[in-house]
Image (tube, rainbow, N blue to C red; front, side, top):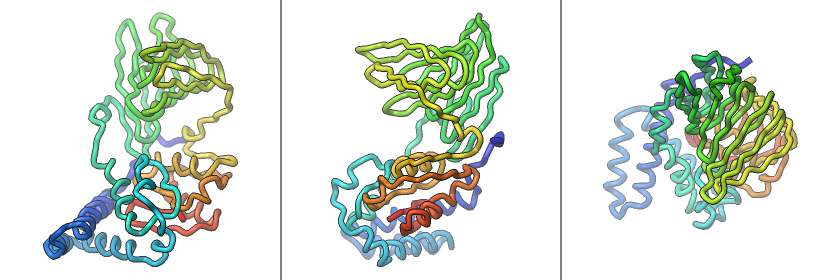
Length: 324
């Protein structure tokens, strides 16, 4: 059964990641600065202030100089790192671009979605939280999710700002329960369902009962009814596609379950729960399929398990791990 709340990291883990992030800044400065000696002195001054800083800088240097990494990451071009920094990086990567890849992966961590930062309820990466609403309904917020709550005598309204949530809604015909997302909304009277919002689409999956969906497209605004086991995607253009699926929402029970799933999809899903980033540096492995169950509480072990299962190598730099 899912715990009520899971902390995303210990303080020492956070400090380690912060030192790793700063070490990369100094490393990049030394590699790219016109005054290499000054850059080196700045890095050494920073490293001298704290043992964690010295270890992070040394770890980064060892990582970048390792022959295993050089042989695995030997043929990237600028185009190879031009895609989304949060997605898995495909292909063997040329040594000269490795730092750029690392930097691109860490850059999004410097920015905050301030609407999520000040949401009524939010979870950190790797955390899940059960929220009891005033009407008796229950929400299970998944990793890195945020929502606002607006209940009064006439309405029950939720705004899912980011992430994913499972709702168990108490029936109230006088006050429909509405969830606004980025690309559409769902309305229910009383049911059990999952919704997820992302930049490129919203998703809704009905576990029990019936759900009304409406898209927010500028040119097209569709309205569709979902019943048990219906899965819907609400697109930015207003289209709503529906199909029948059997999605048990295993994450709500503290597990991620994969059955013949391509490694690319497995890594994408795992990255939603890890404080760091897992990337795949060999295109040949992306279509390899995995059948496995991972406990979210111990998901940090998954990259090493995947490496053993698929006979891959793995290298680690702070919170970044590279499979190749």
